[in-house]
Image (tube, rainbow, N blue to C red; front, side, top):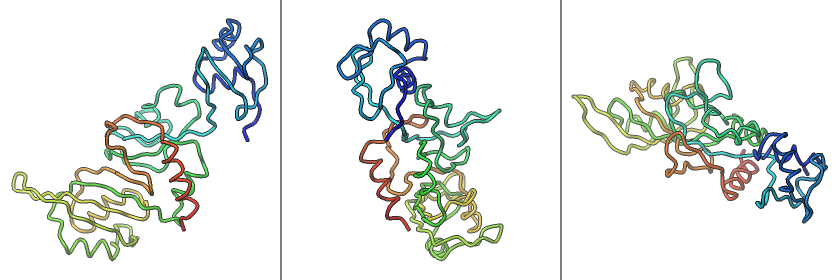
Length: 250
């Protein structure tokens, strides 16, 4: 149950204006709680139980938020940075109010699915090495990726620091020639998330990733209708899928 709070604070947290703007709206009779026009902007309400209407529109209080971002190249997976543009900078001001953060990291030049939330427990469960949450990537690789590579990935690869990866599922989608070079289109599912892992795995196999896109994380799949740089709230079904996955993951 959410804590009780002032009505002006609740409305400000929902991005409906500054506290001073909310106070003016109350004076103008634009705020209604449980069927009654509010006269006091300091009215204490339970956000889980109160029926709140602001300027004729119902207000549904959200204590936690979940956003799916199709991360573009050139932004970093951080909440703030003194020099670089971050994924939080891509959010509308009202969507930053609940202080979401990226769940895990995608490299600056990697695109695709990134979950932003302020649900710390869910983020911990998705990122915990013990949970082995599957993450699937699509990539364009410089080199001829073949059956031998599939066996290498399924057995686990030794990275440049000596770490041996867990078995990974490599699928070859196609090949093409560009300027006398062979490029392979692949799909790769890994069960861990080491630093630059996908790129380092292909380097260990003697090849180079030139384009990388994450398309799923656990049960959450990238909405392909989202242009790069765009985001949306998760549906209730998607949130429940994540919560259910958290409970059954080992």
